[in-house]
Image (cartoon, rainbow, N blue to C red; front, side, top):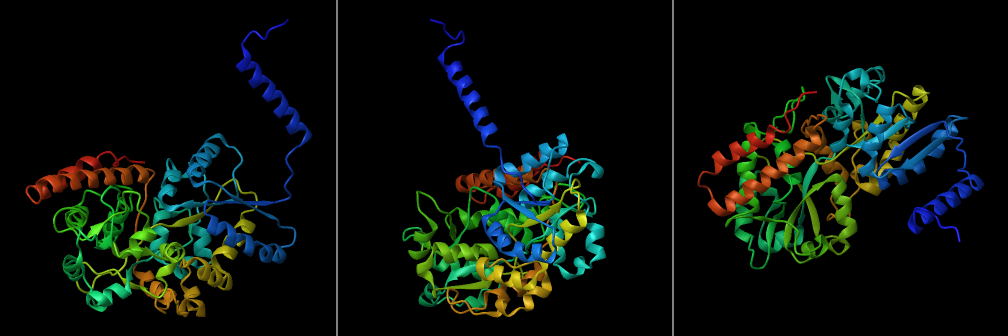
Length: 438
């Protein structure tokens, strides 16, 4: 009897490989007739664009678009590898705001995306879209992404519980007033807290940092999350989420958001436009009991919103028909009727300011106590803060999260004693790891 010299496991792998090869030969992948390819990472976007593509293809005979849904975790590494190895890439690709900066590393001529600055200026789009939303997709003064959204932030609150507890949302115009009201009703024994906010990751902290004019990087890509705005934000934020006078809590112990809101564990949620749709879907029994209000201002008369999340659409340099790809980008991002329908389905406010005049943005929403959700977000959208990026944005966000955890632990054990000095040193130390030049 002849034995395979490398053992049964290797023989099995060899057999599977041979069989797989035979199957692939017998079943070759279908050849695509598409002459434009686009990648997206969000299911909501994918579903919406599938509806929009037929009208584009009808208006441009001979053009066929292939739309692919790509897992967000692998999208950027896949693009980076393809750019470096000069492999096939899509003509258009959407990239999440936290990942975009990683694709802008190196000399400008080596970036795999087309510089959209002249295209935007040619078509007057920089004036028609929210200016702040170009900033996350810029590098050294050049724009590499068309902004999909604005994502202004409001607070979603239990209107019925506010009324029961005697809280007037109209009077919570500053954070001082909000915190004062929160300390009157927050009670960990119930448990009940004024706000849902995390003490172990930097997502909520970053939202408030942007509101105060801070950020991770400046326009030149220099790390700034250890500057005075960051110090003051950390000093303000940590006592909200830990310590004896905290008014905020985060999900834990297997609890889910639906149960927490329904039980009155949280009275307020940080609500960018996209999250308002998630609240509607995840907590349907609160319909008619929820409402929205602008973020309280740091000081009277100052900014009453921030931003959280975002998406850009980039055109790759390898795109063979850039004019047609640009027309597709504008069809998906500027068609007012389709943007209106997309807003009804997602609550996501588009970056095109003239689109907000559509009646869909003024429609009362029963879930939100008949408030005109679109108008509320649109009123705040021109005031969203600028945020700048860097190839090291992922590192910076991670280091700010580490600094938050360290500051929370310090405050729990030592309180106010030496806390400011600790915050300044901790932010400085963590910031050194993110301050890497291009």
